[in-house]
Length: 199
Image (cartoon, rainbow, N blue to C red; front, side, top):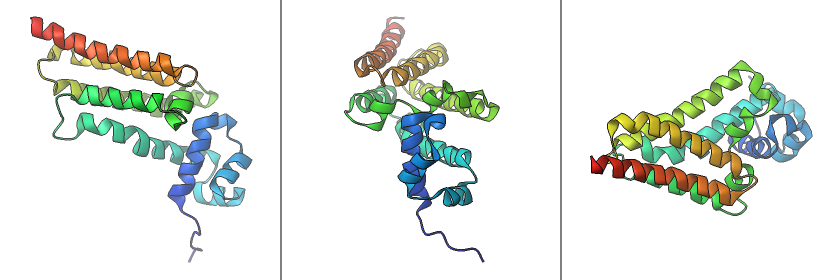
């Protein structure tokens, strides 16, 4: 019978997530991860297999605890008619919040997309799946928006997804520009609705 773990794995993953989120995979040294998690190297390897295993767990934690709660308004029944605006407004607030992880570090997945680790096929696939998940959630929200032209749902969701990714990229260096990018997405939703109503 194996020895019982004497640490909270979820808390360790959250602590590691903050290191990866701030420094990137390559910039997160094992000493940094040890200091953040309170685990020594052998414990990290025993629990997660490797630094990469810990990173994969951190990505899962990020998606489940940061990204998906924001997307919930777009996909869980009943989807409110203003779901897309609610999502975008909430994201804008997070990007403007001082000293928040999102405003200071942007998006863990977007940051990973431009890092050397993104050359790995498995990582590229996760990033593609992340982007597809956001787009699908936005399509759901737009579909439930009254008077929205159904033929414009997919292209508008694609455009908003691109703006969201751009905002999450910008926020690390210019939070005001990131907020303006989200405003552009909000305007796009309004413009599409106005166009539909005029037809």
